[in-house]
Length: 135
Image 1 (tube, rainbow, N blue to C red):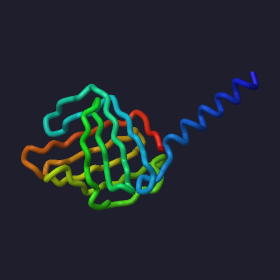
Image 2: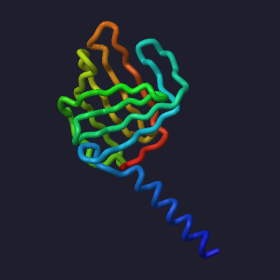
Image 3: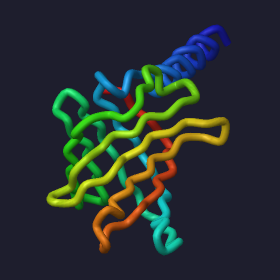
């Protein structure tokens, strides 16, 4: 019985540690199985992973092996602990298109919004985060 409590304690602490981190200095993986193209309302029911690499000035979107890489130009707000309610917005480029990538945690959960609508053919996408892993 004592071993079960120890294992549960370790599992709970491991899960809690996976969701803490500083988005401006830590490499973080944000896993999702659901996202929505906000410009059309179309749901996307496939997995994707967003990787933040702040020291490399990159945000990487991996959609089942299809990779998109955003270059971070600057951040428009700060958020030092992703386990707490808060948000941060990065100004980014993707090729010749500029836009923003926002990360937000509220009482309902965690989401990422990629907004590339500065280009007439650009999209705005909301990604619902299921799991966060600080590397």
